[in-house]
Structures are given as C-alpha cells and as structure tokens.
Image 1 (tube, helix red, strand yellow):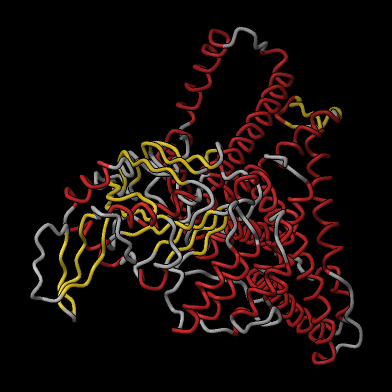
Image 2 (cartoon, rainbow over the protein chains, first blue to last red):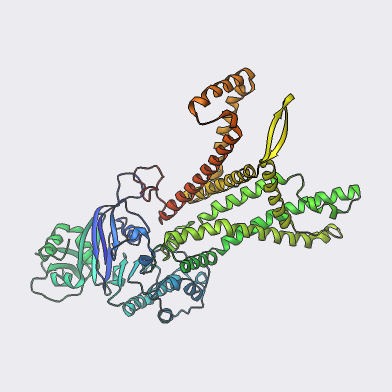
Length: 284
Length: 332
C-alpha cells in the first residue's frame, strides 16, 4: 500500500540528514504504531509519507503513485491529523460541507456519530473549543472522510483521561480492513491495545517492524519479584513490584504486550532484539 | 478521477479558498477602502477650500477630483495592487497549520495554482474596484459634513474612462509617423494603426511583465514577500541610477555621442546586414514586435517559474534556493 524506498531527507544543506537510505513498507488493514525517541524524525516521516515534504532522494509510493506529486487521487485517499493544527473559524458542519466534496467516501452520518462519542455536535465552531476539543472534532472529521490511509501525530496529546479511552473506542469503531492508520506517539500506554503493528525507528534505522501478534509470539513480557533471577532475559527494567522483563518466548506462552518496556528494550538492546526477530524473519 | 484538472474541483478549491481566507481578503479590501477614502476626503477638502476662496461651486471641480496627481494616483494604485497580489499569493501557506491544510487538500497543483492566480488577478482587481465604489458611497455620505449642497459622482467610471483614455492616447501617439523636415522641425506625416497597436501592446505587456515579477516574488518568499520584492526593486533602481550616473558624462559629451553614432553606423551594417538603414522605421517596428514577444516570453516564464515554485511548496519552508540539496528545489 505504502512503500518507502531509499529515502534521504534533510532540512538544510548540511550533512545532518534526518533520513538516509531509509526503506519501509506499510500494508493495508492495520493500525501501525510509529515509535521513536524525540528528534528521530517521526513527524518528518509522516510529512514525507503524505507528500508534505519532498525527499532529496528515494521515493514514497502510495498505491503505486509518488506522493510528492500530490495528485488528487492520492490526496483524496489519505488524511493527516498533525500534532498541532490550525482550523478555520467556522462550524464543524460548515467545514464538512466545504471539504467533504474532496473525499469521495466521506460519510456525514459517521461524522455525527463520531462527534457524539465525544459529546460534541456539528454546530460548534472550531475556535470556540479548547485545543483538546478541537483535536477530538478534527479526528472525528478525519475518520469520517474514510480515506484508506489515516496518519495521526500524537493524537492523544491534550486529551483528558476519559477522552483517551473514547479515542481508542473511536478508532476501533471506525477501523475496517480497507483502512490503515499510522499513529506516531510517545504516549504508548494510551494506544497499546489498539496497535496491530509496531515500527520503532531511530533516524534511518528501523529497529523493529513487526506485528503485535508476532511480537507476543516471540517475546514474553513479565513482572518478576526482585528476588527472582533474570538470567536469559533480553531486557530488564526495575519496576514498583520488582522487575519488568522481556524474555524470549520459548514455550509459546501468552502475555500482554508492554509497549513501553518493548520500546526501552529495543533501544537499549538493539542487537539482541534484532537477532530474535531476524531468526523469525519477522523484521528488518 | 482526473489527475490534473477538473473545473468542478477548481470551483471547489476557489470556494474553499475564499471562505477559509475571508478575513485576510476582507483585511485587504478594507485597506484599499481606507486608502481610497482618505485620498478622496483629503482631495475633496482641498477642492472645497479652493471653491470657497474663488466662490465656485465644488461640483464644478468634481470631474477633476484627482486632477494634478493622476500619474501619482495611478502609479500608487498599480503598485498597491501588485504588492497585494504578491502578498496574497502566499495567504494559504502563511502558517504551518494553514499550509498543511492547503497542501493536503485533494486537488491538483495546477488547480490550486489557477485558483490563486484567479484570486491575485481578477478577484483582487474586483476587490479594489469594489473598495473604490464603497469609498465613493461613504464620501457621498460625508458630503453634508462639508456643507456642500451637491457633490456626487463615482470615481470608478472616471478612472476606468481615464485608463481607456491613456491607452487611446498611447495608440494615437504611437501610430503617428514622424519625419524631420528642413530646419530640424519634427512633423507628423502620416498615420500607421499597426504601429499604434504595437505601442499599446508593449505598454500592456510591460505592465503584465512587472505584475508577473510580483507574483514570482510572492511564490518565492513565504514571509514578508512585499518587503523583499520592494527591496529588490529598490536595489534594481539603485543599480540603474548608478549606471545612468556613470553614463552621464558620456551622454552629455557631444563629441563622444558623435563617436558612438559613428560606431553604430559602422557596426550595424556589419552585424545586422539585413537591416536597411533606408527602411529604419520598419526595422524599429520589427524591434518593437520583438520587444513585445520578449516581454510576453518573460511574463510566461515568470508564471511558469511561479507554478514550479508553488507546486514544490512544502509544509516546512526549505533552505535557500541556491543551496546544494535544497528540498523542493525549483528544478528538481
């Protein structure tokens, strides 16, 4: 669906490239979590995926079309909810009527339903809402466009605690097999139950690219008392109750994916995790 | 789905552009309105002063409301329109948030560019004329304040008439055939409509060329485009003035002028053997045609470059045009 090949990008003419020889493929019908440290280029990657930035080398193909050309056929099938956005001074209804014509699969009923989940209605003016409320309204609109690709940068930033669970419900209820959602975030606990696929990047390196199912099949996430030995663990992180550990899942045991632990582990023990996933051909 | 152009999408882009940026456009409209109104009131006040002094009814002055300052008035009006055009080029990309919404709008680059081009040409001119009409109406409402019994009449038809008159007089002057008779007296010996058309065309093309330069500047610079464009014009003006100062001793020295003409006399037949000195008026007409074609070519080039820059706009402003790896480079 989305194919990034040999991508190179920098913001200026110096040699400090954000991406160099970066490649990645995104398949349809999954919710992708894009994780990485601050400044590793997550937002830049999202802008490159949607054609908002132009790579110096390489290409980003969406359904076979180069996104940098910004063709109407491509743009009408993708939507981005950036971390910070600016909406015009108008009601959601007016905004929808002005823009919905550009999106062939836009559903007004879906918009109303989505807004209702957050306790909003389409008569409210964007600028009369708080930033968090605006974000909710904009996400409702984004999902109602029914584009095949939806890209979200830090979607849960600025949302209150009940809204975060509403957000998960919203994504789950709008998800179809034809849609792909890419969520870039640091707030991994807000979305870990939503993600079907995890991508961890560090600049030009893809440290992990595997489905949640594959990760849980290969790794075992456990909480251990401090007294229990951690020999053989791929990664150990002290926790309130003792140690949080990631172990190779040799016996096919079931465990809940701990995204925060996985992220820290992959960053700290790159080689070890790469070996685990290379062995199963699930990554890289 | 048509990948490049659809009139329906162009209409939707135009509608969305006007609705979303209505406050920016209203600001431009009221700036024009305020400027026109201030100009008219100041001028009217002057005229009333004159009329009281000489006991003439101010209505008689009405046809010459802008008298004595037409070139200044039209020059400033044209400059203001061009500055507004360059500024309005970048309105949808003024901030990162706005730019993101605009660039992600599902329409082709050509449709977006055409909608901007229509806004910075036709919509802007209509806006300026509407502001002038509105200023006229407000001025008429102010008439009682000046204790004038009758002081009505719209400026816009007069301005349009005067613009027409300017072109018509250019045509008249341009079509005249001149000759130097004995005693160095220059006299009109005939009339050539084709020559007149060429004169009008070259004048019109020069205006369009300057306008296209403002558009190019507006597409090139994301922030403070007006200031940067005017700075470039100022620098160009200074360069021309410097060259003129350097040439001044040569141009005022008659012996050197004779030398230059003698050189041209020798040089022209060698360099351009097809030029027949005897038929110089025709040659000059040909050169005028070449000038029009060149201006047209440069105007088209400027619009094309503007389109290239526009279609390569990114959500984050890239580096300088001439940097080595500038993202969204003009020629990538």
